[in-house]
Length: 294
Figure (tube, rainbow, N blue to C red):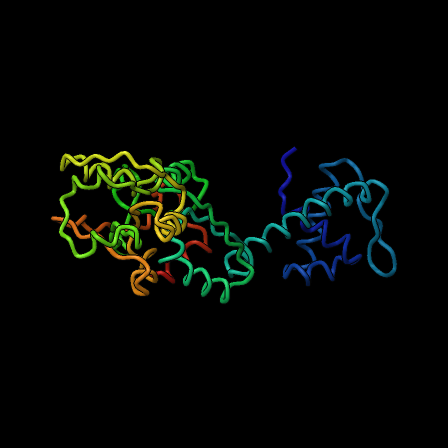
């Protein structure tokens, strides 16, 4: 049976209004157009759907059965249309972001706050994890974009843009004050208790590769999951900590930690925003990226 869905729309409004005239007005069509559609639908189904009365029309038993199903279907369609419009108009929706502690704390948080204040109906779903995990989620389409740190394995179909620089440093507390002001060879790290991130992070991989290239590969005494905790271990003199400078900044300025100086510096790295070109941005994620001016 090949009946236009438009006929069911006319049927729905005629049953809902109890009047062909009112249905035509609601649909902005002519009364004959509604009448013709209802006759075609009734003929196709092989039964009358309406009975005329002095005030308009009312459903036959067969019409009541059909209306029960059409009503549910049509109202679901209307709900779907409304939800899409709400999403487009930024009344509802979701942004799925992958980010590490560092990219959240030192770049993303102020933007998230501003976006939430402007669009409170948009749900912010932040998956917290290291760069390799974020890239995996992005490749699977489980997040809309990721904030990661270099070094980054470049992949076809992904677009990345640098948003700010970061600098890795080694810091220490009072236990190691004899090293303050000294220019140290990188190899001296092999004689010190080093506290650093676990191996599943881009930061750890970057530092390991840098030191190995200079014959100064380290075997850390303590490995931790977060840079905040690494700083706390350094404050308690449990080792020399390798962290991004931003994490140590308050303690360096207060004088409770100091930065070790070496014969050369670790090159600066980048925070990068990465998107999967195969995934079209949602209205919400496009608006957020616009706020970042990217």
